Image (tube, rainbow, N blue to C red):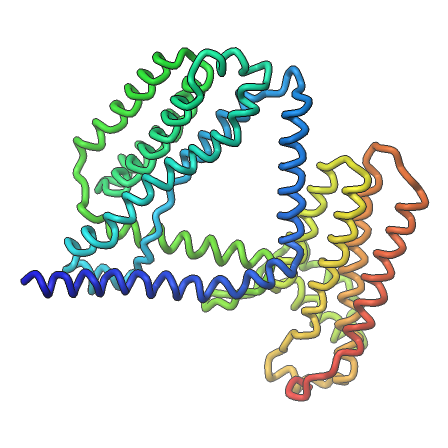
Length: 420
């Protein structure tokens, strides 16, 4: 009897490993294109700003820097995040439910216990990074002197582990209303718990944390719970998968069975401004196709992100670098116009196929020049010392790149015989 049980347990572990490997194999190849889109440069720039800002704060801490607000916000948000990857699929409710006991003992149980450890370590790492600021900032220096930072770190680690435990118990609840209500109550109570641990007398803060944990645990114990919440875990896994696809879709066109043209009424009307004559037909087709495609979604989100960064930084040299990077990468994204494939019946339209590439170049030129002007306005015009010569040269370079070089590249691209 023991041998079949061990065999089933081994098969379940292998099934999860295979699904995890398949998921990584599906998602990881797209990260190459995400990094090529410039997102890696943005992450590097953000990391650089965070590290330099952290060092600058430690060196010259402003008197009124809100270390209390920052600490509570960062640590509370970290507590809230309690993911659990199971790689369950809808078919599991039919084929794997009979193996619930083995699944819980050999796959889900270890994953849940691992989530406790991960949450505790996550809180320890974040507090270790925050502790120097906590001890240095005038707003929190007195509170830091009144307690052992080691004990405070341990308390925060236990809080993280308890959050992962409570999140698992909430997933098991049969009543959706109780599940949602207790999850929100836990998230709301985490904020005063972290605030008390950081700023109030430590013994009283620990007592308050224990009282809140007990108040949330008791209602869970009184409710009907599933041993293994199949439907809930399947729904979470589907949501996680959709989230990854949505994230990748910001930067690259991810094929999906559910993919369909986007409506984008806020911008698609721009193609209707073209003259209604045969000479503009190819440009109309390319403009409509681009504006409703995922390629345009990645293009406008990239430019919107960089415009926000340009408006936020307020440092001319950083703005100039970000502007150049935004123009370079955004214009390269428009070269996807050369890969657009029209439906087979497009070949029956009485249009000169030689007009396709010039039309694609014209649409790319219009989109690229519009983006360059918006990026330049966000980078150059906010109130700060304005070097006229530098920014006019930057504008000219951007217009040359997006208005001539990229369209010229599209216009010279070899035609696809199958599409002509």
